[in-house]
Image (tube, rainbow, N blue to C red):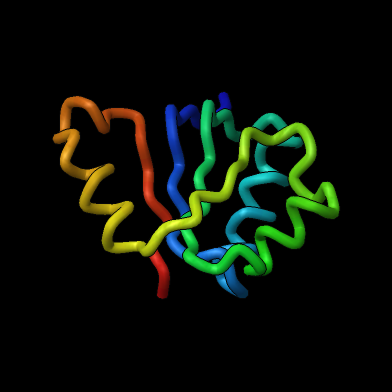
Length: 94
């Protein structure tokens, strides 16, 4: 049975974030994971995830880039509270 999430937020679109995005992409392609929305948060419009998005590396995956500072994104997202965040997950930056 596949794991299911409403939203998965990956903090950072560089080396680690792009690796995690690729792992989630593989899991979705293998039907081991389902996510309605995958958000990669990075302030750099030229981060590795942005380049890979342009190259089609995440085709068929609901992955998008949020061009924001991590703290601002997290403050807004987490302010929704625990009930609104049920079914969400976060991949933190190391």
